[in-house]
Length: 455
Image (cartoon, rainbow, N blue to C red; front, top):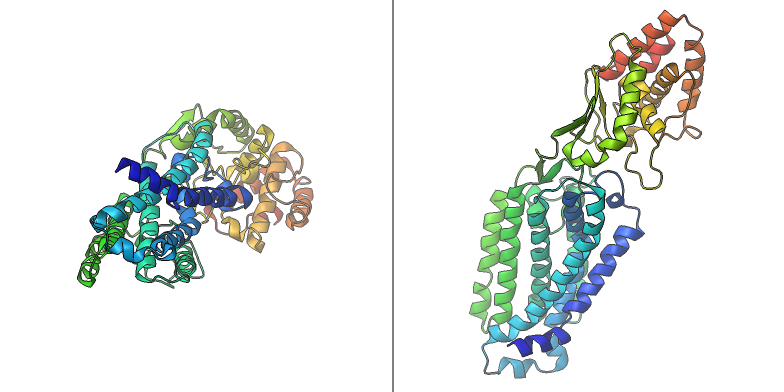
């Protein structure tokens, strides 16, 4: 058996397929400027993000696996030994198990190689660790195996040269529809039933580092892909029509278990990740404890500068929710709440300096934007950004562009420059009153903060 398996490893598509998957995945991750390489949820920054992004990559890898599996299923026919293999004295399940195991070995090796490439980078990027990523990663490996085995089974049932490409393209289209329909505010939302998400090996794009994949989702997909793999194996091992029909039972059972388990939300809050870790008056979430040293100095300097306000903030706290895909509601002014992504803290092309971080914390007199990034070009967001720049100028004594804002090519300067020129001519007590009024309006996210400065 061992010798036969070694021979099958050389004959199988397994390791060639694995090499293709590694090349495709790394080509996408490094070659395209997608969201997987940006912000705090980049694929190389946190363990949970790494596992989630690899699962997202199955959008591209799973169709290749199912197509290659179908090609493997056509091997006996293409070699002209189908009738010979059918009449061999060995039990059929023994003959099909070795090619399938060789295929699985290649896929698992590729999957682990991708994880190791990301894991080496994550080790140096964070001090936070939990095991929540492991089930997500293992189910991804099972999904790859199940997809390739399913392709092999369908390749045997429909032994046509068109079967592999048709399966690959169909899988890509279906997965793209399911995954995009699950994205926030997607145009295709509602195009497929919500529970289709449990059937997809690819997960939606991770939204922030403060959540993990819900355990019920992982359990549901474990049942579904285990049933799929079992059905594929039984179809390949079946010697009669009756056995093939019975082989469908595992995947039906897996679906019957998976669909009711599918949670209302694919992710859940990671309570350990959102615990606060503080250095004096500056606090970050535990998952970003690695960044606390770089934020402490700028944060304390920002609090010192804001102390000239009548009721200044006493501390700086990282928000427990990423605002990359949503705005915010009213917030108190006794605490400066920061979103590291909005501050451009994790940009690889240009890491913000300590002075730039201080400027971002001071802007808005300690308040932050009410708008999500997709609305940052709207009239309200532009006026808000101008008010933030003017309030920062009041603190520093000079008007300067806010980091990560396109000052020269935006309309921000058109509003900020005259507002600052007018504000600086007023008596000191009137300036303070207007800054305080702007701060109150900005914190509530109701009204026009720039209007309070120029009234």
